[in-house]
Length: 322
Image 1 (cartoon, helix red, strand yellow):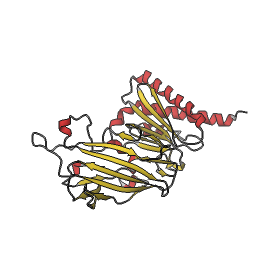
Image 2 (cartoon, one colour):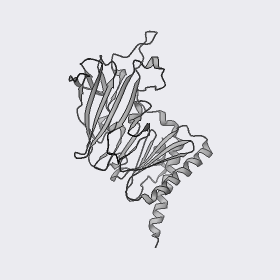
Image 3 (tube, one colour):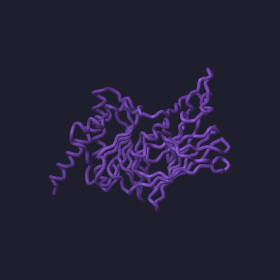
C-alpha cells in the first residue's frame, strides 16, 4: 500500500530542490568570484611559469582517530619564507593542529604564528613539506555547513582542510621585465589517499584520486565529499554535473537526478547557455541542526536526514542564490 503522507512529503522536498537548483544554475556566473587574493592562472605561458610554486596536497583520513592528515609539498623558491593562510577560525567548525614543516633535506623549519595563518621560514629555500591534522566534532556534519570525519566518509568545506601558500604576503615574488613585482603563480594538485571503495566527489578536473583545481582559491570555494557516497555523472545543458548522495535510500537517486536534469534544461531554454561548465550537487547524511544548505563556488550541498531539508521562505532561497 502506498504511504500517501510519505509521497506527499517527498513531492514537497523535490519541489524545494527544483527551486534551489534552478536559482543556483542561473546565478552560476558568480562561480569565479571567491573573495581571495590568491589567483593562479594555469593558462600562463611556460616561460612565465618557471617561477611558479607547485603545491601537492595529500589528504589521508585516519579512520581510527576521526581526523584527517594533510601533507602539502611546495616546490619552488621559498628562500624568503612562506605564509600559509588559514580561514578565519570564527568560521571553521573543525580544529587544525599547529603544522610541522621540513625542507627538502628533512631539516625542521621555523613555524611562527601570523595574523593570517602560519609563517614558515629557514632551511635550504628549494621547497618545503608541511604536515598537520584536522579534527572534526564528530563523524557526521551538523547541517550542510558542518564537518564530519568518520569511518565511512569525510565531508567538509575546503576552508576546513587546506592551508594555502600566499605569495603576496612574502618578499620573494618574481619581478616582471619592467622591474615591477608580480604575484607568483601557484599551481595546485590534490591527491586523496583513501580506501579503494571510497568515492570522491569534488568540483575539480581530475581522474582517479588526483585532482587539479584551476587556482588556489578553489580549494576554499568547494565542498568535498569522500567516502560512501553514490556518485553519478551526467552531462546536461552543456554542464558536467556530478551528484553525490549518501544514505540508505538509493531508490531515490534516479528521481533526484531527473529533477536536476529537467531544472538545468529549463534554465538553458530560458536564459541560454550556462556560464559555468561544472556543478557538484551533494546530499550528505548529516546530524540534526546546522545549515540546511550550503553553496560554495561550483558546489551545492543540501542536508539529508530521512528526507531533504530546505528553507521554505523566499528570502532564504534568495540568499542561497547570491
